[in-house]
Length: 154
Image 1 (tube, helix red, strand yellow):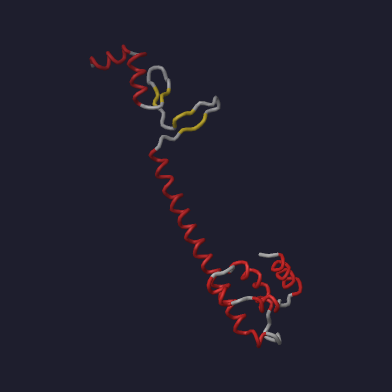
Image 2 (cartoon, helix red, strand yellow; image 1 turned 90 degrees about the vertical axis):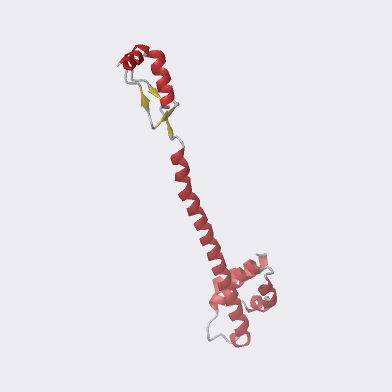
């Protein structure tokens, strides 16, 4: 939005009067082709909102004001549709993330700074905790060989 458009918008808001010179400057064919649509529609919005049925200048510009209002509504609906698509995409992504994390091993930091697996494998003989069953089995064979031989012979 240019400084002039911003001033016109501020004027229309503060005086609650339509800015007819701004409305007169708007080219409907250019708006319909998409040239500078958003800044022009934003600048014209306060003027369109402040028009009353008793405004003398409305009769001459009725169809132009109506078309500007239609284009503003079209823009709002298009923006709303894009936001809804974006929200659906974000929801889909957030729903798929828990599935990924379920397949991964979840870990948490302990007060000592090391990571601790939520699924613990604890040695029944000494109470030492391991990240997975392979490490526990390896530990058991190295540190408690008598228990391994005893369980094998049974």
